[in-house]
Every structure is written in structure tokens, then in C-alpha cells.
Amino acid sequence: MENTNDVSEHSASTDGYPPILDACCGGRMFWWDKQNPLAYYADNREVEKGAFKNNWNPGWCVKPDGIHDFRNMPYDDKTFKLVVFDPPHLTSGSEKSVINTNYGLLNKETWKVDIVAGFAECWRVLDDYGVLIFKWNEANIKAKELLREFPVEPLFGDFTGKTGKTIWVTFMKVPSGG
Ligand SMILES: C[S@@+](CC[C@H](N)C(=O)[O-])C[C@H]1O[C@@H](n2cnc3c(N)ncnc32)[C@H](O)[C@@H]1O
Image (cartoon, rainbow, N blue to C red; front, top):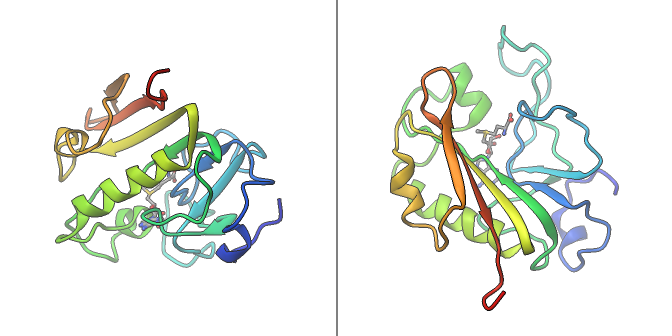
């Protein structure tokens, strides 16, 4: 798979995609291997190393394999076996703060529609019996506010992190009748 930002190159075919999609990879901070060949890393932006002052991680950058909008992704249905969805979770704060430049800021008016649309797209591109991992942080919005809007129930999930406000939730796409 060539690294490319040209979404149109990928619009027609599932051929050549690795089995995992990181739907909004950012700086790939939670990856053990940040160049894992099993994963296709996507985001809606590219950020050069050093573009923001970032003392805690000076090497941080956003270099996706492809640029997409997670609300409208260019992949065929059921392309991936595992999708990880870690969208921005903050609606408040300065756009220039380190956390917001790193993780992005939600639109105050449309955040719920945007995340629900992102979840629906992650679900669409997930194969039958594929796994979707959703990560959320409750700094501004409770997870249950979103989870009740999703069309499927999680299998399991739990809170983690220093403040206990981060939740990782696991879903499986069990085909109807399966
Ligand atoms: C919480 S961060 C992801 C952090 C990442 N998981 C990591 O380990 O570093 C959220 C990412 O979503 C991206 N993003 C925001 N809106 C998006 C959209 N509509 N489509 C795709 N990516 C988007 C932001 O650019 C940001 O990099």
C-alpha cells in the first residue's frame, strides 16, 4: 500500500487495504508500533513535526496514510476486520492549547451528529464479525450520551486513565441471524 493522501485512489476498491483501520489516527500515540503494517492510518489533516510547541512529545506529528472525513469514508462496505475510533472529545478550550492541537476540538453545535455519523461509517466499513473499538474521554461529555445514540450495544468496556474519565468500548459486528 502506497502512502497517499489522494482519497479518490481508494474510493472504488477494497483491494490492498490492511485489515485494521485507525479512523482518526492523530499522532498514533496509543500504538505500540506506530508504523504497523497491519493498519491503515487515516485522519482529516496532516501536521508536520514541530508545527506546534509540544514539550511533552517533541516528535509528535500527524502523517496519515490517507486523508478522509470519518463521517464519509471512501472505502467499500466491510473492508476492515478491526476499526479503532478515537475521535476528538472536547467541545471547550482554546484551539491553540496543546491538548486541542493534538486531539482536535469538536464543533459545539454538531458534535453529536458528527460522532454518530463517524460511528456509522466505522460500522459500515467493518466486516462481519469484525471488531470496533471506540475510545472516549468524559472531560466534557458523558460517554452514555453517545453510546445511547449508537445503533448497537457494546459487548464490554471500562474506564481507565489517571482521572478515570477515559473509556474504551468494544463492539462486534454480528450479522443479523449470525
Ligand atoms: C483524539 S485524537 C486521536 C488520537 C490518536 N488516537 C492517538 O493515539 O494519538 C482525534 C483525531 O481526530 C481527527 N479528526 C477530527 N475530525 C475528524 C474527521 N471528521 N475525520 C477524520 N479525522 C478527524 C483529529 O485530527 C485528531 O487527530
